[in-house]
Picture: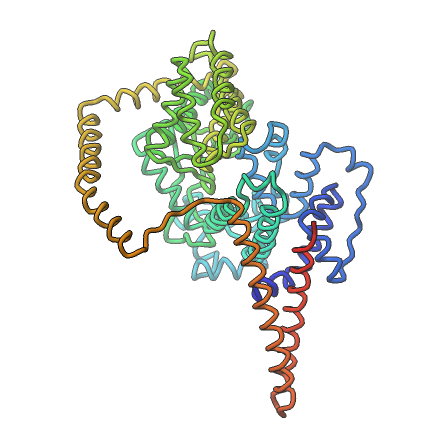
Length: 553
């Protein structure tokens, strides 16, 4: 508790900046609910609770997007994560989150050069020739420079911004406090488990900061597509790659956003759309490891209608079990099997409370709306949007890996339709689905599943006497325990825990005051007494604020 108190005090300037921006964009009510404004005002940092008339007229989704852009890289990345949560936000909000980009000026080369020297272990001009000190791309986490290896090979250097970790860690600490407050103070937010979501976001952001991990992602995808001439994954030059520097082959072709240039170069856009879709579907349903952001900016069109894929900072992973669930869902939809679709959706929702009657009705309505369509006529993006609407309307939470997958598939279908207006994602998905279903019933697969089921059944039967003996032994010793999940008792336990924490801090504060008073009488050690009084003062603030918050209705 003491460390958390000191942490909040340390981050007060940034907390004040966040609250000010949120209020300016019309989110003052949220600042009040979370108690951030009160903390700052008690700390002497007075907030101005006004918004401009121009901002008041904006849609709420636009206001939150603009606030996140102004708040900086950590919040921009959080918004980009929200763009994948189609189960949590309606389409209008998703569209705004998708606009979030990190518009930041690049780090000048004078500042960057010693940083690069340390990463390479040598001067930049010794490791590379024709190094361009002016970056051709700059984002919040890293910036990208062009260069050549001594043998003339064109490469790009993705360099992490100096000291970016300190700024992000400060924001993550504040987000941790906000997530805890939101989970306890806003009932509608609790079901989304913001603390757990923030933990996932922290892991994802730290992986993105580690450019060595991105290099391993590239290498894995390159291995998966060896021998496939239709897809090109850049090569990593490991001798120069580290946690803060990623050196990889430069793909020289036509950016995915320049369709007219691709046509002028004689490339076949229909072939490019088909190959791009097949590549990502192969990642998802065969490899179980996929590029999670296949938008046009991450695609390069190369000679011979080859699709080059770049930027592997955001990737998703699917287990074989999860891939089978996706296939089951599509197969159930094709067969108009409502029970099959409902079973998959219930599996996805986990242990959350579900109104199965309502969910079943919504699934029935979905199947009815697709009743007259053949699978080949279904737009996958529309279907996934309809499914996520059902999940959202039933207050369910989609697993994080599926949220990322749904977003990737919707983005991929949009890319394919930009290249080819007649593009239908399901045309490319259907063969993969059929192959997966066919492989389930191959003799080898049936034997493997049969052995696994038999093994599990035998383990249950052979372990039954042991489990019964253990149960009887615990009962005789009076140690038989039954766990009941009672929400009100949990809440009482949390209140009791907070009360005991306040008592402990109060005792610690009194001890510090008494001990510091004694130390102040000892010549030469008075600085320790002053430090003790300072800590006691901070503890007192925390106790007073905690008691006040507990008594607030």
